[in-house]
Length: 371
Image (cartoon, rainbow, N blue to C red; front, top):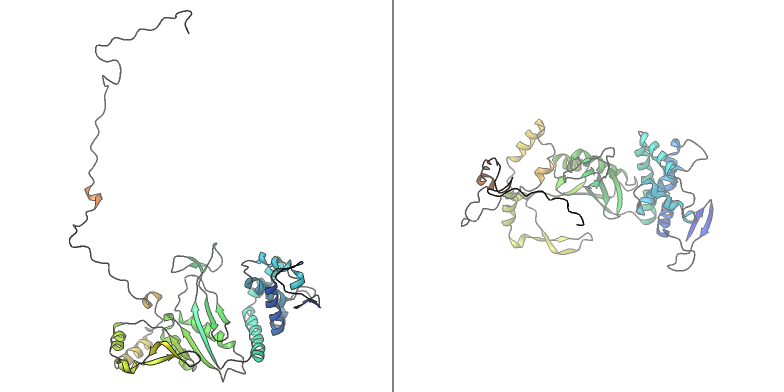
């Protein structure tokens, strides 16, 4: 493997044993992929206006090293020193203070995130040009919980009782690429259609312009995506969608009435039939005659806003009935008796003073020659 250090190529042999071994050789391969794909150069070009000194660190290399550090398992800026200790692999690495200033400049710039997204899209176009573009792209949209052990900016409590963040993520299934993400507080809803649409638009913006017209898009979301606002946006953009849906009694009854001969095998991604899945279109089996007018009235009044996360889950089961042969349990607190008043103790003849008819013990006189 050849790595570049100070503008010169240094050959590094990857071997499991021997002398002069170095750690994190796999991380060096990741940095080299970023170099070959043009990501480092694209980041440097997008952030050139944020650089304050000519002789300072290349901002594209700093952001690339931060990404490599995170992929290597780091979780704070101080972990960047692990790359700085291997200059034979990574070359000069910025200090933690310099990396912090770079992050602060990007965060302070109103167009900082847009600069990063443009650099990612440019590098992705180069990768698709070398590796080939997929004919169909499935965008998986979902939210996840990230815990925080301190009161960081934007952190809040989540619906599971934890504390931290609740970002919205978008991944490409066929290429295993992270397309877009949106950092949100922990109390953000999982089915907020506004956030889902924003992240989906960012994910579509990462597709190269050369392939955006020909590629087939499928938006895949769990039951948090079953909102009219998100699905209407997908239909207007001619984007296929697959979302989860709560099975109510009407849908269950329609499924039970489907004959066995009407089911057709489900298909895998390559078009082959799945051995353990069957599908059937039940839209024609449902009575939606009076539903269209209701939906139209709801949209005019604004009542069809995205549902809360609690409404997307099944209701809790009713408590199980008790054993009829077992007597009802009485509250112990109701059976507790009030404490009896305690009588005051006076002088007891057997405990205090002398007993009755018992003379006092005389004092002993001092006797010499006695220990």
